[in-house]
Image 1 (tube, rainbow, N blue to C red):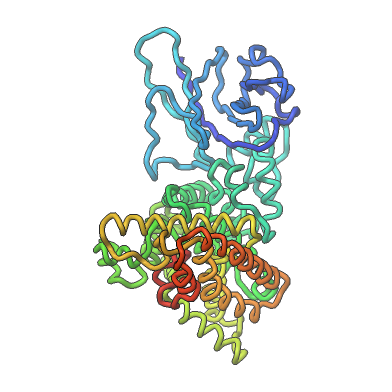
Image 2 (cartoon, rainbow, N blue to C red):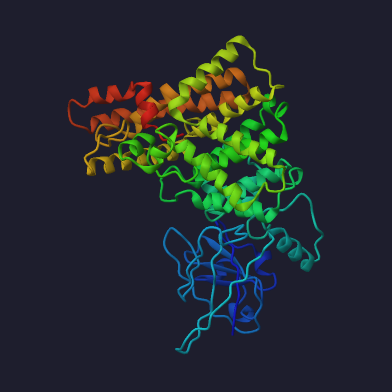
Length: 505
């Protein structure tokens, strides 16, 4: 018997809804089926549809089976703690980048295993070449009409994530929760949803398959092992960029082309980030440092990587060559602006424009500059988030700093600023970063866009700085006597040290 499956796997932090379990083919493999009010699995094992599996009686896994069989299926599951995935028992090797034409959600293959010993026949994997074609066919089978705008998430299997996307413009948006609800696909879902929400998919006639493939490849090229510079950070920056694009001054002036550039730049601004900063690449003679002549090394790499994926997927191949090249150039200009070592250059220019009141958003060059400043703000906006979110980001970025410092110690290299875990604490690093990098930038942004959002961000920034200041004495008290001076020095770092040490670009 040959089975072909495609499995979107989406964990939800709630019981399986009864209306889902009552649908055709709803099978529960829970250790306590009564928790969900599920029917007897043996009565439903020959029916097609959804399988829910629960290993802890707290979180449900929905797995949509897209194949049909009239035989009883005995699937094999392998669940690893902290990372819930479905894996094959026959040694299936996931294909490398570029092999999946769609991958709208993270799916794994599922095979039945014969009870009797013997060779296992080769199995083919069925893929959907059009995400929308699948959604449309599913609705037609259920007798539901085709709805507009495009439905990005299956309403039955991503209810909570879909509910969160309805509030994607909220500054309190919890990207960590959203990433869990989408099974680690927050960047794909959020960026796709925003492009659709702004009407950019239809306006620029973007091919659905190419767009899905591009977003998935972007997400895959972020390094999940990085505590901070990963796809979740990219999704967070993209969501922040969306909040800024909705500010009155920008919403009234930006063109659809500007919005498209802003969202794509936010999603790709740290693409293929290695988890170390530019000085580390230079002193270790990394090939990227030589390639870009020690100038904006990481930002140039992020830009070139994004261009490579645009060309690989041919996302803009239907546009005139001049337009496609213009998108690539302006995308690079936005990403290069996130170089933290050029912070003072952009901030001084922004301050001069505001002092002279000569920013005219009717001019394309001025709109582009404002987009650069918006992306810079989105990139380092973590200290301006509510404490519950900001604290998590602070811990993650400091963990990445200290990991680089440990590598430098191991190889007897000079330890980069802010990367020495023995001389710095999370609190001291964050206080210095907020004081010398974040506050000046967001103070000028509030001058440019004096809105409720700007005041909210400054309010959170002040509260978060106070919270870290309250925690700093505790760290100092637990250290050896005499460490107060280094601690004070950390609170007053030079702008050069922050430029070299900060990886929040």
